[in-house]
Amino acid sequence: MEYNVHMETIQVVLDKDLLHAADKAAKRVKINRSALIRDALREHLKRLRTDELEARDRRGFEQHPDSAGELALWEQVAAWPED
Image (cartoon, rainbow, N blue to C red; front, top):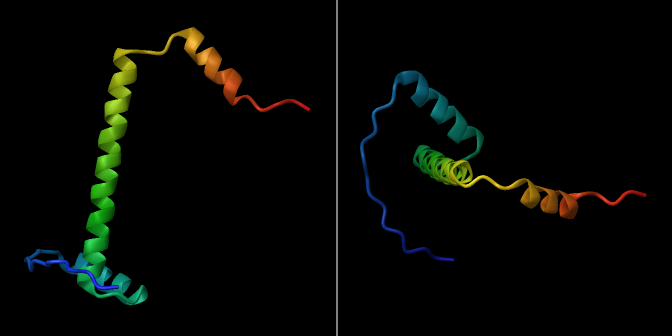
């Protein structure tokens, strides 16, 4: 499978300990430093997006809380059947 991805070269400043840890991690998982940093950045951006969505949902529930009747209905649906 061939990907037509345009890569940009950037300069990133890291402290010596972080660079050493990144190089060790990249070697451990058998990828190069750039791939490790790309993967880490993707994961971090995904986590930020998830945090943003959860904060948005939290604000929505705070502004429009569920009524007791709505919760009771969901509890019935989600309840495990008793033997």
